[in-house]
Length: 309
Ligand code: G1P
Image 1 (cartoon, rainbow, N blue to C red):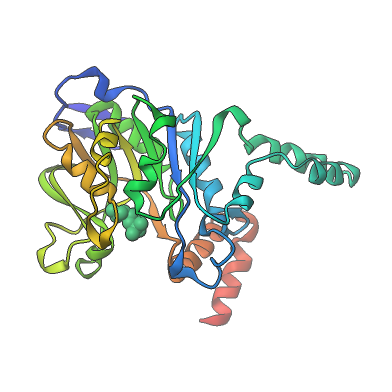
Image 2: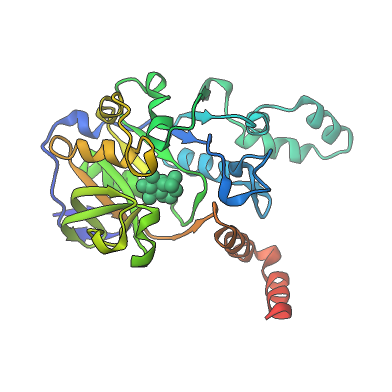
């Protein structure tokens, strides 16, 4: 029996006791090489991770979530058209000078507060779009032999504490591989990695299998992975063979599934609301939800919503 700070007392099956499986997570991978075809034409030249929700790009929400969870190094796996993303996380001396000249130095300080130190950021280029598993594998040398997090920025999670910080708390207890999960409608499981449940204990689910994008008729459950992972480096060894799975892509889900015999695997039903910002409706809903969170915007947004309803 253990006590999780935010989720009460749970019976959780502990890992095999290998201390390596519970090492502190200091690095995170952000796959940002996707083509974002679900969001064309907006994604033709702009990567979807740069889309703003209210006034902040999705990738910045993801980076801040990682930072809050104790991540110290951020590794972006990029593709083409990613220069705006690199500019976003670099200093802009020209902009800073203009702001200072216009007596807006508080904005300069605000920007400096979230731009990471250059030593904390690295970029790896995924040369071919071969799938999420391949994108993560491209960062293997930057990670080395350590556990790591993966954050998919188009899955935006509104929660306090952030989704990854919640997962870290669970990881400290269960160790091994941990993913964030949520229940989705059965007819939508074919968009996700899905858990085959071994045992369930409140918010923590132990899985005996994992399937990427199953047909609803054969899906083992409707507990779906959302884009947050804490993984052991053993997953890279499974990705080494670049085996293709669902959609003829190298799938991260398949590599995690291959470690199930050796590494404890748990899904975690995080507390919070997740928005699929890779889809038009999910993205628009996220903008409304995040704007409503801002006291300075809430009343105006409600007025606008009423106007159109
Ligand atoms: C990816 C993963 C899938 C996961 C999903 C979460 O799929 O492959 O297992 O459930 O992210 O958003 P994608 O959305 O890249 O097709």
